[in-house]
Image 1 (spheres, helix red, strand yellow):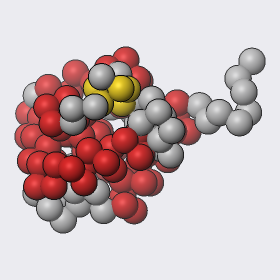
Image 2 (cartoon, rainbow, N blue to C red; image 1 turned 45 degrees about the horizontal axis):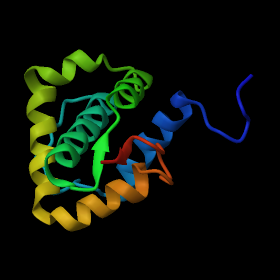
Image 3 (cartoon, rainbow, N blue to C red; image 1 turned 90 degrees about the horizontal axis):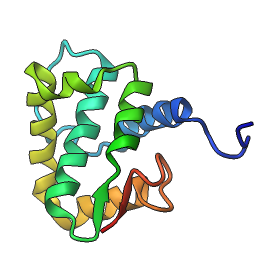
Length: 126
């Protein structure tokens, strides 16, 4: 039986979507495709952040299974992130996060690390 204090992955995905939209993390700094549905745009933002953390954050590493589960909870097939417009969007967000490497690593840990407020344990210690 699920613990009522721990939000489900779907609930966390919804919280993630809201947080991404409200936080401004990379918004306005990455070029967005205007016709891309919000769940796909948010999945691309998360994919860009995961790629960024993998490349630039020395103390963090992504939990790929948790990432895929979060993307699926958004209603997006993780395989879509590897092609076409979602791949381009994810790369655009990765480049936006690279504009402030220390700040982006810090926000990734705060929002998605061990004590993350959005999806805890999406990023684990290296």
